[in-house]
Length: 213
Image 1 (tube, rainbow, N blue to C red):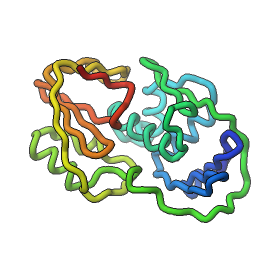
Image 2: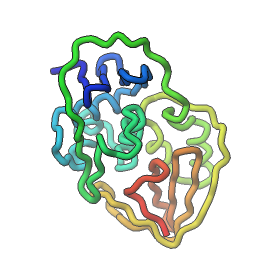
Image 3: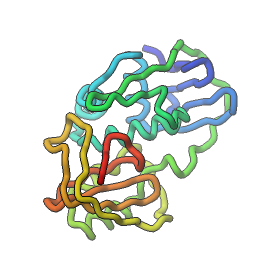
Image 4: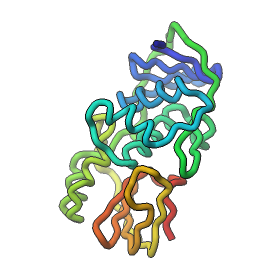
């Protein structure tokens, strides 16, 4: 099993150290265990569409951790940020199916760049924010959605709220794919939607898998 890979000749992934090195710019991103395991599994199956259920089973359920689709969406978002894959060309979203890794990979044996810390935008939400949402909206499951890499970020932004009559989810993992009379709460690059029945989903802002109108 490989410990390091080079992607597209310019990105080195060190799965042991949990670091992604961009050789041309010198930037280095730190990633958590979930992101590392997800990337390794995607790299082991290049150019194959892997279902959400496959990825969740590999990264979480194989360790006895039960999560919903929002956890996968957030972890994918963190991986893309570390790969600087803002347009989703390395990790491609296959709507209604899953994800496909399109990078050209080769094994790598040495990384010499000095690591720097990943910017605040890649950190997870703070525990205070999680508890605040639980208290305000009485949604006991919210906290499970926001825990991914174990890191925390200070609460620095104002929560933005908005309302939608309908939100549609492109997922195979949830028992529901539509939410009606939805209230949306946004903090930075994270967003949570809650419908009239109290059902909730959290996801990165701008996700193509959640459409609200």
